[in-house]
Amino acid sequence: MKENKLPHNHDKNEEKILDKMPSVEECCQVAEIFKQVGDGTRLRILWFLCHCEECVSNIAAAMEMSDPAVSHHLKTLKKTGLIVSRREGKEIYYKLADTEVAEIVHRVCEEMFQITCPLD
Image 1: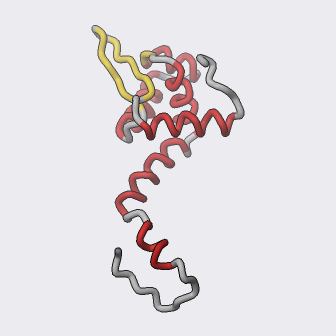
Image 2: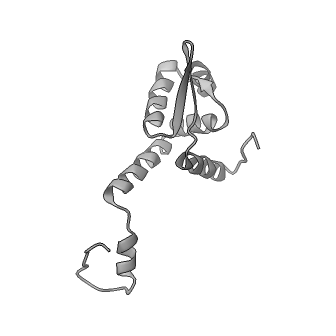
Image 3: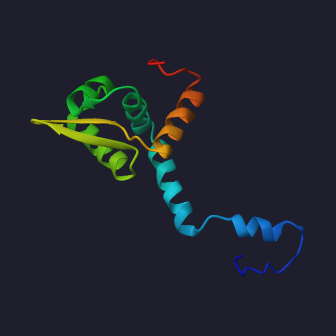
């Protein structure tokens, strides 16, 4: 149990709540993921990559953006672990990471957009 004494005792569950409270570091990690999906362009790219594996040029064409602009967004999505990449010859292909966090983000996107996965 954390040794956090609150100056006022307003609720009998305070100790239980404080005991389960995430650390500052954990909250920062989750906030970073929310930052990624807080950008509309990255959210569109992420949703696209939830359903297919694609190269930068095809992603850029689908997003109606330049390759360098898409590459910048892919770099930040990859940094947070939401997507992964693989090289095949000169091409680099991106897709949703096979992690619990990435799957949760995928499900939340589907719910928020009120659509079902086109591959189901």
